[in-house]
Image 1 (tube, rainbow, N blue to C red):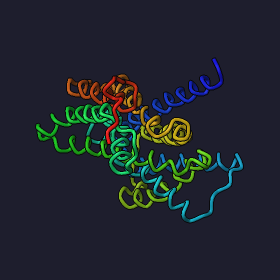
Image 2 (spheres, rainbow, N blue to C red; image 1 turned 45 degrees about the vertical axis):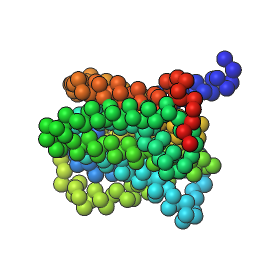
Image 3 (cartoon, rainbow, N blue to C red; image 1 turned 90 degrees about the vertical axis):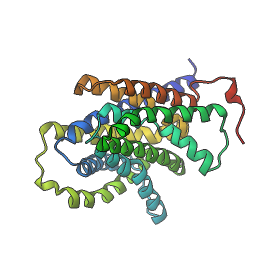
Image 4 (cartoon, rainbow, N blue to C red; image 1 turned 135 degrees about the vertical axis):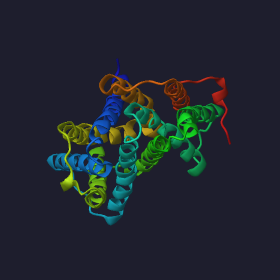
Length: 304
């Protein structure tokens, strides 16, 4: 095996690890949200992640930037990549299963394609990719449909919140390209620190965390979220944005969803309904088409 092939294999291995870390986060959030409100969960995991990342930056002797413009960009990245989607997912999981949340959160590649083509006017659109987007969102519709028709308002809103988090992740992946010239660890640390600063007053005002009585399982879940699903995952994420690109990173979404569904069934006794199974297949198929895992001749013609 040559060096290039070995390097590519290493990056794909990191993509699988990232998918597991983020897939497991849905299980951890479901445990934590039983006794800890969403904003406090998010603030806790962000604070832990930010402290660990900043310490690593210092240990490696990486210079902290001082320009206000760059810190403003870190704030935007922190909102899109962490504060907003973490809050939407944590709130959504008060009303839906962790496996369903992970599945709905596998759609960033679909949003990333739509944004890069229709908003940023970047090329590369094909009939195959448009078919993939349609297939993926059909899967979301299959999952959302029964809840909306049955009048299960909280469940439907929970699903919409998690789907909104996918849009935020897609925007974050696109926005993160501006940080390609600096160390991935620095980008992760600074954006996480800004997200923590933003969420701390929200948690203090909305949840009054000093009045809470979290279970031991919830405390351990928040700690694991901060160390593994936030700090470690962010380091890997920003590295992969540089090495695999936006669609390459977001293509791990279906792996993340698979891990979340599997862990929800094994650890939380969640069930796999028919609509969830059909939606899972359609979303996975749509993501695979958009990211190029599935190809056929129709995809060779570009859309103007």
